[in-house]
Picture (cartoon, rainbow, N blue to C red):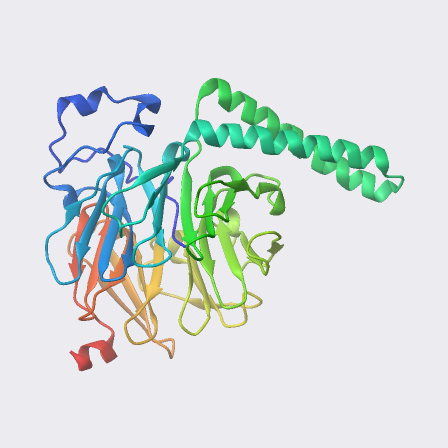
Length: 382
């Protein structure tokens, strides 16, 4: 759904948290298995995404931090997490079952509403998954080329084989060097079906709640290996967006993807389907677009400040909120009227959620922040 942390410059040290000296000993790939440290001021750390799990808010961030807060309380609690990687995305299928993804190929899952988490995949297992996937695809393509007598088909198969061989070599190289690919977004369609998007054209899906994962990279036409930054689910289609203005659409839960004409050729970070089943994409330099025909055509939306837009969510009473760099928060109502405020922190904002009273909980460079609603309909009801 959201945006990549790569390039945003917020995966920095948690300068507002007192980190024990032992934490500085955790280097390289040890972060994959090193449990998240207990941080007394964790709500002020770098946080990247926030999700709703029933009556609970769940925020994820750097150093393996996952924080929870029940809607009727004001205190954030740190969850038990078996990794110290930077988390980049979180998604819940229901009030109890959710997934978070992050750097070094890590996927963790919860079955108790975010209080405790278990690692389902790490970067070393991901490399093995890639090796098996691309190796098998190379064999399939070689057999198909040998069996074909159609020159056009053979040419297409040879191009696919060249790419598969290149990817197989990359996977073997990663096996020697170690896992570096980050996952950048996660989308839980239900308790069994979960999709994960990541750097260099990575796309995974689980159909058994994360017990096993299947690569879908070759299903998406992405010859240059651009990053996939966001996933979103509508009534008819799944959408995938990323670098170079890429937007893809799937009608079969990710088995195949069609390339959509893009209204912009810079990176998209925010991807969202609103209550009216409209598609929203946003990214670099304040580029925001809305489509009411499933990505066939787009209308451009402009805020006052042309900063990077990182996330989009539904407002309490229609319309959408957007957050971005430099503390920018925008609201676009159902009629397309635009309002903008700037949070006093001026911080990079990476995600938000709407509270029951209509107020906003923001996360980003300076942890958890808040802002009163400026959705007029919501204010009138309070």
